[in-house]
Image (cartoon, rainbow, N blue to C red; front, top):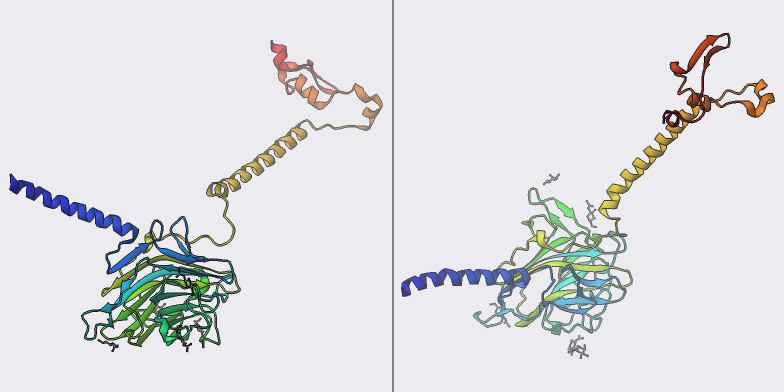
Length: 384
Ligand SMILES: *[C@@H]1O[C@H](CO)[C@@H](O)[C@H](O)[C@H]1NC(C)=O
Ligand SMILES: *[C@@H]1O[C@H](CO)[C@@H](O)[C@H](O)[C@H]1NC(C)=O
Ligand SMILES: *[C@@H]1O[C@H](CO)[C@@H](O)[C@H](O)[C@H]1NC(C)=O
Ligand SMILES: *[C@@H]1O[C@H](CO)[C@@H](O)[C@H](O)[C@H]1NC(C)=O
Ligand SMILES: *[C@@H]1O[C@H](CO)[C@@H](O)[C@H](O)[C@H]1NC(C)=O
């Protein structure tokens, strides 16, 4: 008996475990080593400043208000130091994958961008809401005591920050003067051709940030949403993050609006410590809001032209019928008639009285032509 019970118990508990894992996966699977957000609805993501989670699960970092900033953090800090390393402070390999979109007043128009960052603090209230992207201020920019690593997706060329152009991706350590930067784009897998991407195009883009703790290598890869991750990264640099990152650090996103109306969105995000970031199911991500005015309902869009067509057709047909009737009963008035005035019968009346000049009303054929008998009133009334 005990044997049967045990055999029954095992599949049941396995099923329960799988079930729990599935439930957690759909919200934000967190196991201390990584997480995944397929949209942010119902998650406990921490937001600050303008940042908010939209009803459809979209994480909106900024909402179009100018000179403001927004940030979002994974709620708990992660452990970046490997306790088993020689000195106990070597930064572990980590990997992030996220989908974002930047909307400016018009595609490609320079507005401030956003960053993905690792920071010992989640209090960024002193950060500026201009070219410092809601992450740093003029006072602390470049200071080694920040212990911040970031990747900027910058859509403004700021000369103070030595930016290369107004559409670039940069690797930042403790400040926004990048240690390496590249114009936004990706390398085609087949032949290595470089394709430009416009960050502030309001097109969703997929980015990957990887740190290899063994070889001390940082790599950043960008692609249009839906394209498989390009093999060749956009940016790659050998850099030891061990002296930069504190053991316990937050990971998150920041952005600022500056003087132009702009909006910054994150659609999904995954993170892996000592392992690749879990793959994001891009088909399940929340949709970006529509550009421009709300469209008419689908019903209206399809029904309205058809209804208009039918109405026009009806009016034209009616006009043709009326015209035909008019021609059928057309009167020929001759000059002599004017003298006799009201004594005439209209052709229409004659037509009716003789039921369309039917043979049965024909009395005879004489010098004036055919002579018909006519009855006033409609033939139908007469037949009653
Ligand atoms: C600790 O060791 C790692 C390599 O294992 C190195 O990258 C890091 O810089 C070292 N930290 C210090 C403070 O020496
Ligand atoms: C955040 O930092 C500011 C100074 O930059 C400080 O005034 C404020 O009290 C801090 N807020 C929290 C919740 O620690
Ligand atoms: C860097 O920040 C620390 C702590 O806020 C401060 O004491 C120091 O003066 C700053 N260094 C510079 C060069 O501003
Ligand atoms: C590279 O391959 C793409 C298709 O993957 C093609 O459209 C493009 O023309 C190629 N470029 C060159 C320089 O061969
Ligand atoms: C790509 O962007 C760079 C930098 O803005 C520019 O110099 C280059 O002409 C662009 N290439 C294409 C094909 O648009």
